[in-house]
Length: 221
Image (cartoon, rainbow, N blue to C red):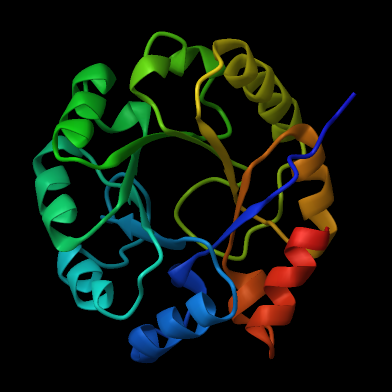
């Protein structure tokens, strides 16, 4: 039977924010009750879109005190990790496909004093992380294909979330299970019921007239 965690973390994705007002938008969601600030970094190569780089992360660091949760959709990823760590990222998550040696990449992130995450695309199997769980602080399940906001939720990923929830619980490790993509008050209940700890939402929050109410609606979903 599905069991939702008692405290769901909410991480608004800045990809859906007003890019002309990123500092103000970041402060607004933090004040509205966000737990983490999620930042999608895209290079136009690993995914078909371009967003922002370490200079934007550095500029926003002084605007918020909540953890900055940085998702690197770039390849190869290793050469850029130190720059994002220096810019102020608290968590750095990467894809198994973004470099030749996932284990080494996670070691690098941790050596820089940051929490490490692995991101599973819809077609990426759970087995991709079986042998690196000792180096993982966050597992992110993509419930859309990465690259653009506002996509429809891929319901087939609920089974993957359930498998990962069991896997994490069996290890006894303190690993956060994140879900990103098409998360709304309508899908949040399914995602949390499958075992997610953290919901990443862009459009569902930044398109709402009241950020605090939007965050509360996701937690209640």
